[in-house]
Each structure stands twice: as C-alpha cells, then as structure tokens.
Image (cartoon, rainbow, N blue to C red; front, side, top):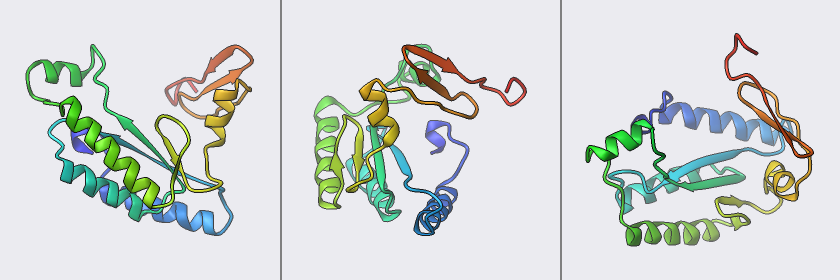
Length: 161
C-alpha cells in the first residue's frame, strides 16, 4: 500500500472489510467491493498470489482487478523513468492475470467485465447502469454523475463541497 502512495495500512483494510461483512449480514448494505492492482513494480508472482489470497480471505462479494498503468506526468512515470519502478514483462503480466482468473473462478467468482468479478448476484449495479447508458447520480467528494449524455462532477474538496 505504501508503494502506491496509500495512507491506510493492511490492518485497517481488514478491519473495514470485517465491518462491511457484518453490515451486509445485518442487511444494512447489499454489497461491497475490493479493488486490487496487479503487476506492480517489483511484485513477484508469489507476492501477487499472497495478496490475492489475503483479498479472498476477506470474502468480498465483488472484486475489481486492475492492471497497473503508469500514466505520463505522474510520480510513478517519473520514478519509472529513473529506473526505480521496474514493471513485470508482458509474459509475467499475462501469467499473473491467467492465475488470477483461475483462482477467482475456483473461489466462485464470475468474470463479467474486463476488470470485474463477482459472486452470484453481486455484479456491480453501477457498472451495469454505466455500460447500459442509463443515468445515475453520485454523491460525495469528487463523485461524477451521468445524466443522459452529461457528466456532472461534484467538488473534489470539502471546502468546495
């Protein structure tokens, strides 16, 4: 998490997942999701498999697995340009994604979009609405709604909100 610039720690993530599972069991929420990034700099196959195991141990109803993309103009791009962030080669990346598919299918998850996996009945409603072209309203800092053909962005800071 630290390598990605995240401020939270793994134990905080596990606590949040526990709270979410309890809320779902009590019918306080219908579903929740974990997002993971595969093919990180210096990430071994074993390290990815361990991270995937840790995620599956949290029993999320939905998982999104994203391949790291280093965007120009970012700190990652700058560090990669300096040779500080060696990424897996294409064969290694493909092996990890294939392994991920096998692990998630074996755990009962269905693959329904490029990056999305869900247990039966847990596919993301937002994703289905987005790809169908229907409208949706989003609330909170930086949230973006889609109403017809318009995108409406919420303010990104608390003061502006």
